[in-house]
Structure formats: C-alpha cells, structure tokens
View 1 (cartoon, rainbow, N blue to C red):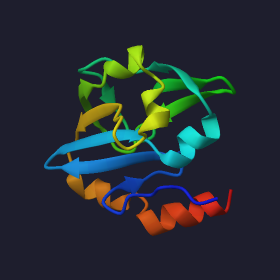
View 2 (cartoon, rainbow, N blue to C red):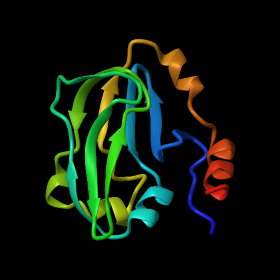
View 3 (cartoon, rainbow, N blue to C red):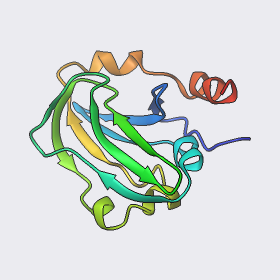
Length: 128
C-alpha cells in the first residue's frame, strides 16, 4: 500500500515527520501512522517550555483501535503546540502533513540530517 511521503520532509522509524526552518523543527505524524491508527479520537501534547531529548515521548495519539506514544525526532525545547488538535484530533487523519503537533527549537540543526530520507522512510514502511 502506497502512502504519501512528501519529499521535503525527514522521518523517524516511529512514523513522525519533521521539517526544519532555521532552528525550529515542526513535528507531526505521517500518513502511514494515521492510516495504521485508524480514526484518531484524542491527542495529548506537551507544554510549551518542555525540554525533550531525541526519542523522548512527547505525547499520545489515541484512535478507536489503539493508543500510541509520540516520539521527538530531535532534542530541543517545545516552543509551540498545536492546541487545535486537542479539540479536533481527527484533523491528523484528514491532513497528517498539515496537522503539525509541536515545534521544537533545536540546539543543532546538524542532527536533522540524521533523520530518514523520504526514500529510506518509504522502504521502512514497505518492510512492515
């Protein structure tokens, strides 16, 4: 099954996407993740000011099928949270790449390059 994997983003093996602009990384869940989860009914996100290490759990996505932790692709400080998802969690299903979850201020943008390329992420999804 083919999923939408935008070429301008980077990815994690846990199905988060990341987009770097300056020293801010925007994070959300991938099309593969929302499709696997099914109808998303609840999203729990961190507080602005929270410090995250790479691969720290920063929240939870709950669907009618399961509950999944969200993992930070990079270390940084949460500078913005998409609070609209708390009221409209289904927007993760409708637009996984438009419905970002958090924005992180990162210390080192170099770490961004260690994330999976769109090609590597597509291969990862095909192997599951």
